[in-house]
Length: 122
Length: 110
Picture 1 (cartoon, chains in turn red, blue):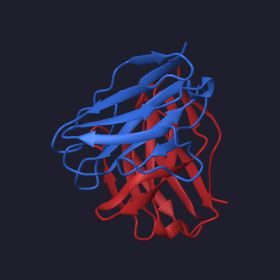
Picture 2 (cartoon, rainbow over the protein chains, first blue to last red; picture 1 turned 180 degrees about the vertical axis):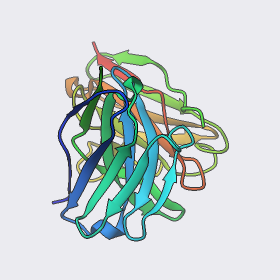
Picture 3 (spheres, rainbow over the protein chains, first blue to last red; picture 1 turned 135 degrees about the vertical axis):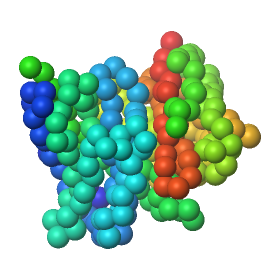
């Protein structure tokens, strides 16, 4: 059974750093792209970026480029999303999602993690 | 890039059909047949309902269907049921390994 299990909820202060995780199981982790999605309170889904764990090839949304870092450790079948200096506006639910590949590359998110709630407050 | 445009809400009675539009540009929806749709119930992770414009994953009821014309994709729910009440998002490939979500639509079953 394919599963993506994310790390638990976090409460941080502005300026602190944070790294959340997404562990894949039940499939070949290195052969599928993993995307990250933000959902701010009461708002819609926003695509942040995507990584191919096989070679760590990564693409960021222009809106998130320079604001977060996406990485993966294939030896642990885990993808990561990290911040070096959190802001209150980073408060949101963050989802990871496995992507199936089509002719042009990853095209759809077929399995999702349960989400990690990040709260940034002084 | 800008979010794809969806109606804020649609509603229908049980058994009726509702459609949700998703309007983008020739750089995303209109340029590729890689539009997918997701259902999200409150407090839950999104669930894939339609991919590659009109294909249904295993286990998704056939009352869900998708289509596309030009820069606009659509999700239709036929024979609306109470459990279909949720938020729905479209998602499109936008070239060079970039992607964009729609603004989201709340479906209410009256």
